[in-house]
Amino acid sequence: SYELTQPPSVSVSPGQTARIPCSGEALPKKFAFWYQQKPGQAPVLVIYKDTERPSGIPERFSGSSSGTTVTLTISGVQAEDEADYYCQSADSSGSYAVFGGGTQLTVL
Amino acid sequence: EVQLVESGGGLVKPGGSLRLSCAVSGFSFTNAWMNWVRQAPGKGLEWVGRIRSNTDGGTADYAAPVKGRFTISRDDSKNTLFLQMNSLKKEDTGMYYCTTDPFWGQGTLVTVSS
Image (cartoon, rainbow over all chains, first blue to last red; front, top):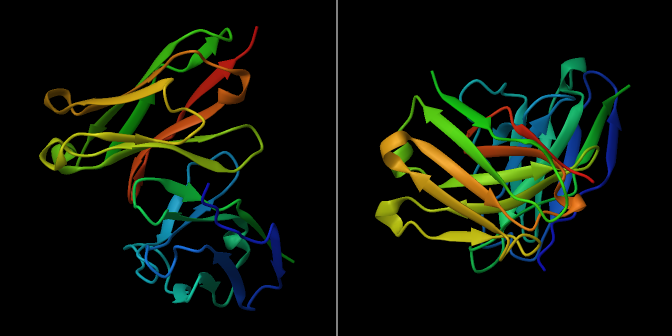
């Protein structure tokens, strides 16, 4: 079955840049989406179609894609950005969606 | 205002059935491809399945762990999405969300336990 791979955790100090990679074989052909989830809350879409930012999401959130890896970048990390982040995409057929295992972002 | 409100969760014994609903308002449900996503306690997000809009065929796809046991359907006249869950297992326990990007509901909790 198709898998997306993320690091379990990333730690940064306030004001620094956090980068969360997500790798998968079909990513060169399928768009990726990124979700932020804080404890006890539903996920929130922060990046769609690899690089697009929904309205209301701060500009410090950005996405990029290179080959089989997509990356969520948070510039100038703030304490409120501490959360779990999930990438999501589809298998090569487009029939099945899959989430990465999630990355816990800790703001030191 | 966009709202997705899930309901129907609860405690059920292994082997039992449950039907979840998701009432939608504030956007064009008829044109939306709708997903169910679940999250086991303390675990990550897991895609359960998706149903296309009726104009795109109205067919559904399912994740391997639930295929053959779960059925997704929709009633466009009532702006409501359904998830029929049969032959429930303990590993089906978790919060179930309905979603169509960028909108998510707050989830309904399903607990499968004897």
